[in-house]
Image (cartoon, rainbow, N blue to C red; front, side, top):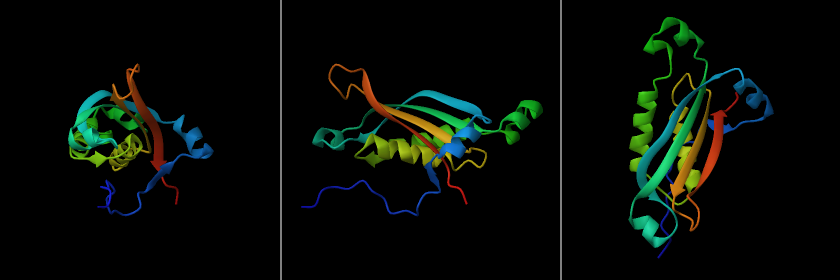
Length: 147
């Protein structure tokens, strides 16, 4: 019997880790933050983790130019964080990943679908996954692929 896989067939994502030039440009952007989103999903490599959903805590920072919306006070001129949150919730709660790293990368992909979002920082933690530790997690910073 072959091991279960969590990989999905899809086109190559249009996101990548940020290079030094891209990191410098982040300093010129604003940050919209979604904090401590508590969701449940299948994530892990052990049998118990593959059969029972477990808690994950997600923190997201979306990098975008928010200067226009700061002036206009109009939702049409900004990143709609409720829409992004709803898309993240739907994806995470229906997901099945072996690694927290994969889950975090998929969350970044969802965030970067929003046209104004230039980069996304994602932190995913599994509370209680390690004995004597509050949680274990991963942080990723992804941006749009150049060119």
